[in-house]
Length: 190
Image (tube, rainbow, N blue to C red):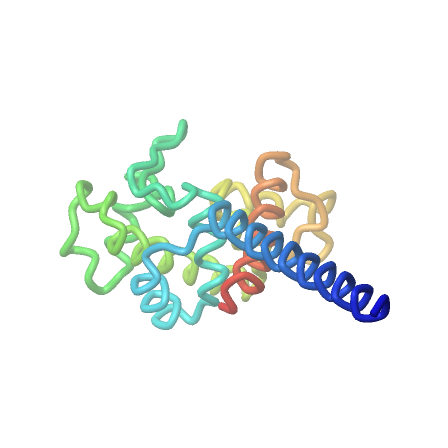
């Protein structure tokens, strides 16, 4: 009789532990989903496919730039989900086939903002020969500045990659995007 009671006791303990582990795991996932939201998936998947980008990479840039706030405006006057400045938006309108269809007011439209932001990321990746970190530096600090860094032996040994990112803000930005990309891949299987 004692063996049955002991067995039931341990069975109850195991059930409680399993339930607690499950609840904690589910709580952790919910916390991560709140910290790393996945919104506008239709636009992200469409633009990622069109621009040969990893959807997790695109999500990571959006999260880092605006935390998925389509109304976000930065201190540098960048707007929308992917934080595009009016000057960059106007320049991109001349580069994208359908650019003339849009006006400055469209920069807050998630579909338009993701379209232009993904196009800009593809442009930067092509410009920097697929070097993701260099392209991210240019997305954050501007291509002219990054071109200067690449010409400086103190920052770049080969003129293509940066061994040193001289701006702390840009260095942290690149780290945040790459970390977020990994989390989006793991969390959502992107």
